[in-house]
Image (cartoon, rainbow, N blue to C red; front, side):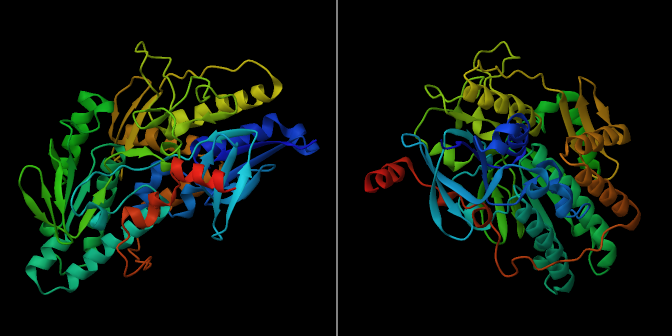
Length: 453
């Protein structure tokens, strides 16, 4: 009798925690060969996304924010590649391996947790010139890019070029954008000591968002305090303002102003991974519609969770409310989803997911932060202790936690070296370069493949 195969797509917060739970719950079945768990991911690590801005700022290293899959997983089979399509009728995943080979992977149970990608809009020049902050490569590239702009400005004899290279624009006033602007502003402020030819007054960071408030999820009071703190640090905040056009040397805003710049960081939200959008099933606000048990409607073998899934929020009175795409929810969904996969194998009843949000934390660099844990409103050093304590607790492995803490201590006492590693030197490093959203198969392409086979 062939083993029951559980395929988990993605090894982010949701995917990794789900696989770890499956390994624990199905340990004996896996060891006997009755069940096989396969996790498909293009990388051999889980990325701790909330700390990416600190990677870009050089506060912690790239390795410190990764969790090794070979260390974290003991019984699951790891398949290095990307699931570019799912044939629901044939219960098969189409996997593009990192070797370039394409294979079909049948499943008995499928867990979709491919996460999200950067959300973009039809803005002239955006695809060609915007830099992202959604994965490790983008963070490493952005750090290189910012340091290179300081070096080029320092070497330039053209006043206009120097001014443009020292203007940095971040679009998106959510957590990712705010933390990116805050952390990188401290990087450039510190780096100026190494570039005595540069006028500190020329270095400007601008944070732009179409919304009327910064990080509205924090509440009005904390949002205003964060806004005031950033402005006092010299970061210009442009609210109720969008981007109209981007060129290689300037950005034009919807209020009619044009800002000369060579750096536009795009963090204006995320959208579901193209894999789930191409499944030809019902979506809710761009995310895969599932029940509170994580099952696709009408299916008993396909589950979905994390950023790509519209999971009903049973803690809200609004019947249309769905859980926000946060790491907090993803890790807690994983345990319930894994339990439901096991229950489906054993013919048992499935659980409903319900989790009350524990609050939000925002690291603004240095000793500055704002936090809203368990209904409390915190700012300053106290908020920073809570924020970093939360991140340490949320990291999956003890060695990863210790590595992050060591990086914080080393940076506190040793500062930054401002080294540019030359990552992808000579290339633009746009969102499309790093996220490759055009590699996925459409529903029509999947049907055509099925007919051809």
